[in-house]
Image (cartoon, rainbow, N blue to C red; front, side, top):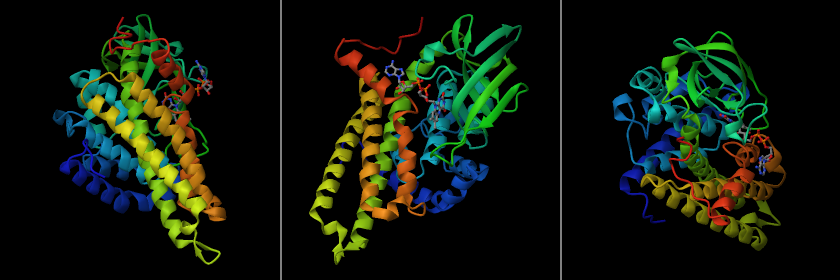
Amino acid sequence: MKSPYFNQEHLLFRDSVRDFLQKEIAPHFDEWEEAEQIPRWAWKKMGEMGYLGIAHEEEYGGMNADFFYSAVFLEELGRIGNGGFGCAISVHEYMAINHIARAGSSLLKEKYLRPSIAGEKIAALAISEPNVGSNVQGVQTTATREGDAYIINGSKTFISNGYYADFIATLCKTEQGLAILVVEGESEGLHRSKLKKMGWHSSDTAELQYDGVRVPAENLIGQDGMGFYYIMDSFQIERLAGALLSVGAMRGILDMTLQYMQEREAFGRPIAKFQALRHRMADLATEVEACAQLVYHTSWLFAHSEFAVKEASMCKLHAAELQKKVADECLQMFGGYGYMEEYPIARAYRDTRVGTIAGGTSEIMREIIAKMVIDDKVYSNTDGKG
Ligand SMILES: Cc1cc2nc3c(=O)[nH]c(=O)nc-3n(C[C@H](O)[C@H](O)[C@H](O)COP(=O)(O)OP(=O)(O)OC[C@H]3O[C@@H](n4cnc5c(N)ncnc54)[C@H](O)[C@@H]3O)c2cc1C
């Protein structure tokens, strides 16, 4: 399909990302799902290909490419069919190091951004806590200033990459408000435990306990008291990244299902010939395309520096909800085989479920959209700047 958003270079980039993921990454998925870990060599290889710094500054090894390169990359990452891998990479690149890239000092960029883009360090972003998830402003983990350091106490949970991360950008409550501090993974007083999940098995998810963790004051990202603003500001890219991953995942699910429908026979003909199933696939293909166009339009707004809170929230809501429907209805086409672990549709179904929870729940997306469309609330990118 011709597109006003993707030019020839984007299409060539798409081919090379898809080819790389298929040849170098996908063959290892079963192993990584079992081990619940992505090996260091894979991060390194992604870094060498330039895929971990697509939107980041060239000065630190990034590509500084326009947003549609990221859109292509995230879509292909979703399409390759391992939600855990997609989560790990996107959290690292578009959520955790994003904060250092946008507000970090040159010292932090040298120490953490450069090796993260190279795939030599793994990053995590810790916002959620056992008692505080959707309400970011309510975080209870404290960072108390003592001379040239901050002392962190509290706990975080559901942190993607949190178990193996070399560093964790941690949202804390300070005397000034909220602040994001870079915490080394091996810090004294930081205790990490791995959580067992329903899906996304390749990605490690951790509970973190901070018992008097001492962090040098130079590890503060941007300004103390601005943490809420930084988090709110980056929610747009997080939601858009989530939606692009979903669009890619849905395209992958449709493709594998259509192929199966050509191969599987019932009553002497391919099941792709049954009208009841054809119409269902026609509906799904239409809905996915409509969703993709909203996501591309929002990507265009983002690429043009629009603070598109409403559209990004709509993208996250719609794409995550639609992905649940697509995974469910496509699994049905596989009959009993769809329920078997050796069929990738089984993993796709499992991995899909978390989409309406992680990165902001569907209910929170609806709350934001409702405030904007019903109460005429306007969000600006200076909200929370104090
Ligand atoms: C696999 C996985 C990976 C994750 N990765 C990360 C990560 O890397 N970093 C990180 O910081 N967090 C991460 N999270 C946490 C995720 O962002 C939270 O789970 C999510 O924001 C919801 O918070 P909660 O789980 O505390 O749910 P709660 O906030 O307790 O919500 C419970 C239910 O109440 C609903 N609800 C809450 N408030 C409202 C309201 N005002 N109106 C209507 N309904 C409401 C919610 O939608 C939900 O259905 C991850 C979660 C998972 C499962």
